[in-house]
Image 1 (cartoon, helix red, strand yellow):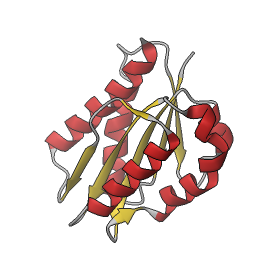
Image 2 (spheres, one colour; image 1 turned 30 degrees about the horizontal axis):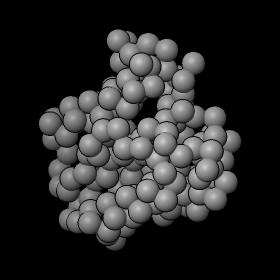
Image 3 (cartoon, one colour; image 1 turned 90 degrees about the vertical axis):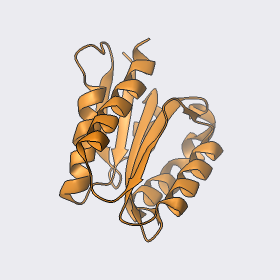
Image 4 (cartoon, one colour; image 1 turned 120 degrees about the horizontal axis):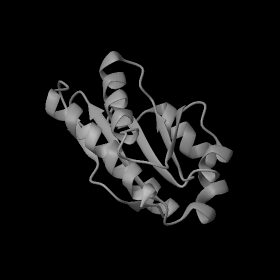
Length: 150
């Protein structure tokens, strides 16, 4: 059974609501045969990445960059998983208070270096989380999971 690894840093209720919506999409009953494994960024490691078939990442934009927790995750796994996980499907969400530019650049640079294949447009926005954002997060999770079930 294919595995979707969801790695996130969600220290606030706002971010938790985005992660929950994303997971609801990934675990939608119509998507069969995909195991969804959820790991906080500070707990996810090399074995988690190597044993997954696809990835969904979530982070706040902190001071214009990805969270320190997600950066730590990438620092920990990058050299150990790069070759074996190249071309695996992924996408991500980033929520910022004011600016996500640096976080977007970092996510693109790191995942390009890993050779991962973007399979759904990322959800990237600033400001309040609306119902539309939660719906987009649910669709994001469902789309990435569905690529593994096919």
